[in-house]
Image (cartoon, rainbow, N blue to C red; front, side):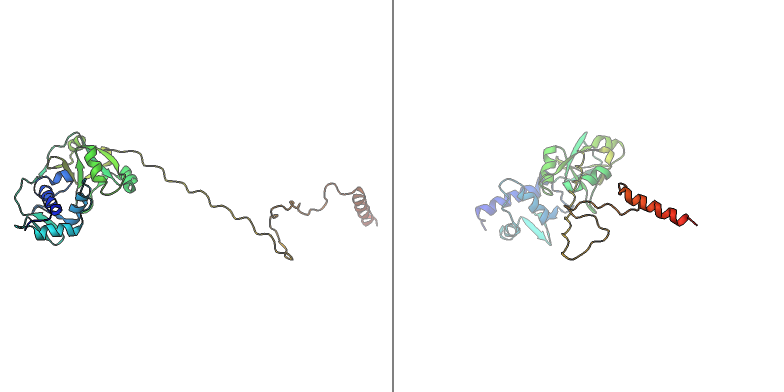
Length: 246
């Protein structure tokens, strides 16, 4: 069955991605040549001119193309046509530098702890900064570029695997082999404004409280105030003298 032009072009693109150069798109196929449909779609929509592709477009190509060229099993898809697929090459010496772009939310963690792959996965390392940033934009609009001292890491005993012409794989990388910008300092939140005390209600009294805005400060009551009239001091001294007399 002849496909509509749009789906025919999509079928050719899928044949190239799944049957020849998945590494160009940051895709690592399993041993049977399959990959999750979600990963394939995420890679496809990042390519110029393919941002329209949705799951139903993939289902149409798989279901309508005759003879069948692709198979969907569960949530995975693979090519049925033989191709020169790249193979994993464990222990392949890496170039001096490799690159990986990370999401800003993990920047501080990577700065302190290094790079660690998610459970059951491997780090996807690119030969060029441009390729790494392209892959990183699938996770965040403005990823942070990490430069990896790959050759030094390999000499220290870390194992890399080559995949195709563009990618290398690694289980994790210690902080000492990474170069990345210093994480930005956390933003300080401005202090909350202090609410002004409410004016006293007429007929109420305040005990031991500071003066309200606009009120004069009150001096505490003390015995023997400075500046008291002279006659008061004299009268007080006279009363003391009388009490002393027999």
